[in-house]
Amino acid sequence: MSLSAYQSVRSLSEAPRATEHRLMGQITGEMIAARDAGRHGAALADTLYRNREMWNIFSIDCATPGNGLPDQLRAGIVSLTLWVDRFSSEVIAGRESIDDLITVNRSIMEGLASFGQADA
Image (cartoon, rainbow, N blue to C red; front, side, top):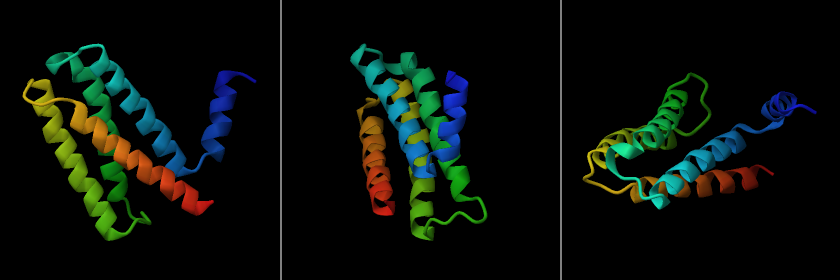
């Protein structure tokens, strides 16, 4: 089976929370690799852009009519998105470490994994 065929099948069969968990794992892994490689400040811009982009997609999804998440959780995700955006600017400016962003992503990943187990 070709890679594109595999990806098509996975996208059709994978639950949305599993997709979100996988994406967040990939981006968090990139941030960890960048940190471990000694990258700081503006050298993290590409990695932080991908993280911001992911969080923005989550935020937009929370505003989509028919989103089944509770209002309080949706508001929390939007709030986290705003924090990620502001904090990322501080990291790029060299005033903060990427570690807090990694910690937040890991915490959300744990929640997504728990959510997926509750569905099973």
